[in-house]
Length: 180
Image (cartoon, helix red, strand yellow):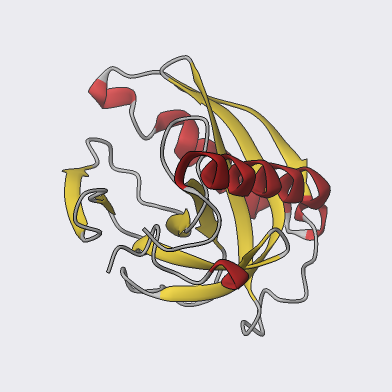
């Protein structure tokens, strides 16, 4: 099974989707999906002393502008183990550049998370939470001599639009009806 392709289409909607966790909150280990096998592989250990500020993964059956599934940060009071599926809703999107290329990261919350599921839009979060996320993405590749910058953080409406676009991109590239 390749989780990027082999999840039912009806489980992925712009405002209610399953996401696949690659990296646990607090980790320096950068795992990512091996596109050929559908298995997680260790990409690298972060060079900086920073750790992921939230659980990190992707939304299956999406295709972002960088040629990968759409990235997602999942805010949760507990770390979520890699290779876990989580049903989430979006509250915002981080618009950034990574080595000069656009890179969008959805900010999401699990439906069944009593600490965070009171938040419905990024503007409701305590400022420090998204300051941590912004700081992480500004510096996490610095010691690799790579450039990243956060352009803006946008609200839920923009996040939903980005997800819809990436679902459409996926269906155009891989087809909408069947699993690969």
